[in-house]
Image 1 (tube, one colour):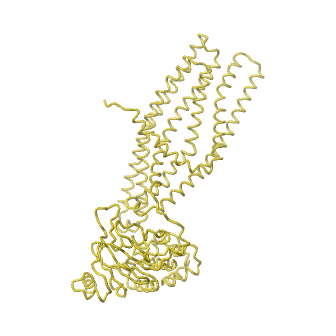
Image 2 (cartoon, one colour):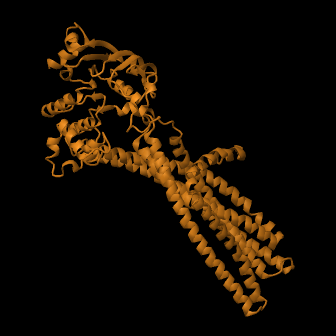
Image 3 (cartoon, one colour):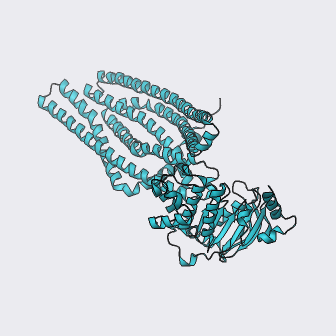
Length: 596
């Protein structure tokens, strides 16, 4: 049999570091410390009141057995009733205060985690799924709710009961107390080992629930694809498998819980029988003065036994909360982007529109062995229209990501108006850019909200003017609800051309200094393309524009065309210059498009 190192196991499962991590979350309680402290005071008073019961009950038993005056019996009865009412009142206010503090604390924690999550750099999201992160904010924080509301209070209450109860037991009968305490280390030891198992299963269940939530999130976001590929049963099977895995783990955990509870019930009642037996012997030999004392002793023993049982449950819940805390702190420990309020850009950070790429090399954090860009250098003058063309995977979209500083180059640097991009505040830089992507993302609200996303707080007149410039007002006013028309999840209720024009209206409203068009017309029919292209031409006037295009017909008028292949610039010039390069990549791409 393998030797079990208890000390090592304890450090692994309930180490100071894990506890310290959990206590880190208590900084969110600090603003509500007066309410929390008052709740703790009420908890202390109600716990002490509970400890008075066994003593008073024992006195009551002795009074009746010894034929004391009725007045004395009535006085003890009234005193017990007063203690009971006092305990009920203090318990009520303690629960109300703790619930209030918990709700405020969790609201603050949710806000803090969401605010931190939304500020994390793009590299964080490369290996994370949306459903999993959503589950962290919902399920894991909900798990902490029980900890903040009841677990900590119960832990303190039971410690008071155990310490106070043992002190009173020793005062009543030292011999009987030593006999009774000989049983408890065994129960505590088993409680500890049980907690180890529960922690493992609880964290596993949380992970499996997060995976199941991810499936729900992804299938609902991609419901069009699910329907188009007739994969409803495939997704149902996938979700069923994940939920059954979580259920199986939960049921396995339940078996341990059931076995543990059964053992505790047997242990507690067995201990009480043993204590009564031993107490009866002590009374018979005169070492215990009365049946009332034994009665008090048994009730105190029951209180202590119940508290030890409760401590095991509390320990289990603390283990659960540690698992949830570790998941949340993993997110909070990720370094966030240094963003600031972008509504006001300082004059020294205003962009003129000139862009320089100087020997830029880049690879994605998740694929360090594959260079997406290698030694890329080019200049874009203010108000120029520059097109990026080349086969798929050439690095065009990566250049857009670098312009927005979603990632930073691993070699070389990017400059705006001669100033290194790293020296310009991130929010100030992005506030002066707008992107119109190929795959437009619209929020599930109405058209007004989606256009106003380019300038929160814009007036209806500004929104309507932006819509007109984007050739979107024509179809918007045909809707019965106009700007209040709900676009549906990801804009599913609008056509591709309509979504593109909403995105252009959003960019118009933002009035950027640098405009980025990422394949903005590649997925549209001829009529929609004409309307969108017309809107884009209006939008590009008087600002620096970076255009990524597969359809070379859309970039013939560009001031400069940069041709990329395998992460390097292979050609650069105007349409007229590049079309005359014999054997050139641009000429070959152009001939392939216009001869088919």
